[in-house]
Image 1 (cartoon, rainbow, N blue to C red):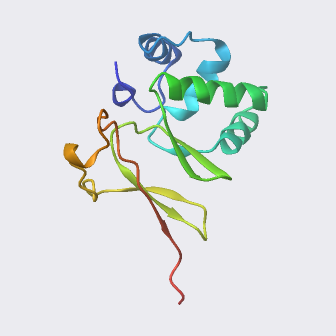
Image 2 (cartoon, one colour):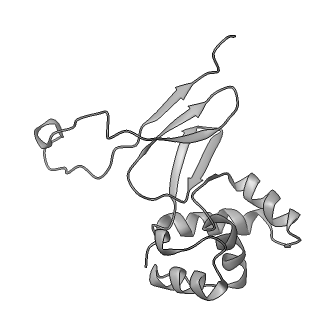
Length: 144
């Protein structure tokens, strides 16, 4: 089962199966987080997720949110996108893709182009293989 198999507003049974398929034990708190993250493709922050959980009346600690996000990243359920030392996003779209980060709005959006950087095997250091290419293109609002 992949994240793409999760439909909008997934039920707990579907989410529990998704977590279990990725060797993540589906606790009640992890299911609360998963309900929000996997309802659609999105770029969530830990603070934004915590706010959404609290707004939905869920009692969950900041540490639980961070630990759950780390576990989901480790299991391959989320991609961690580190924009800079103060901004980390958790992307529910785990397929290879790149991002625009708007420095003015703080918004992270997907880039819908193929990998703009061609890396060939002979370009890599000896004894290594290419794992992935993650590009964050920083943009600003146009002066108008």
